[in-house]
Image (tube, rainbow, N blue to C red; front, side, top):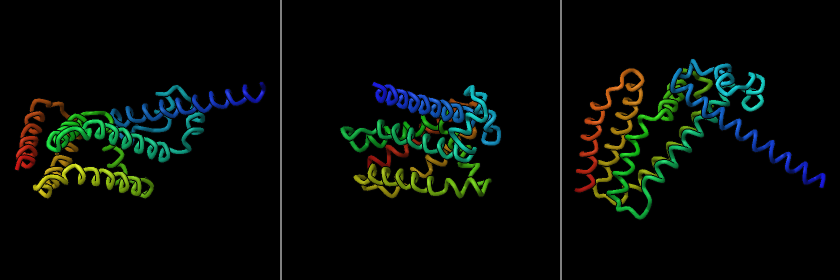
Length: 204
């Protein structure tokens, strides 16, 4: 009986640790979206989660370690979101448009704002950049492959590739602009025009 109680206690402690880490990651995303990278300090996250700074360091030894975990979680969520948006039973054109619409919706999320904050921080902080560069390269390569698989059946694949890059650049700009001004109707019109270009290319 004693070993069973001990195993149950260890499982419970592991679950509690996982739950605490999840709360830390959620608080970090919210802080990044609200305060930016510079404002997302260990003390700020500890306060949001209701932990002491020492307790936070028990889970993440440094801000960099915490931000790397956040970046991984954001990429995981994004991958799941895009996979769910384009199931295999849809036609190639419907899958393409579903992914594009998901990109548009994702651009206004706090997750995307948090990710952009981290990518911008990596440009400014050489130490952080060195730590996340392999992660970003690996994740972007995975998304590039998924995109290539998605458009592989289209004769206009090269044009769709360029349009994808245009859409990513435009939507990243929208995410940053949204933190300064919330002109949703104007952005909706712009996205509708971009969607028409994709539909035209997919129909050729």
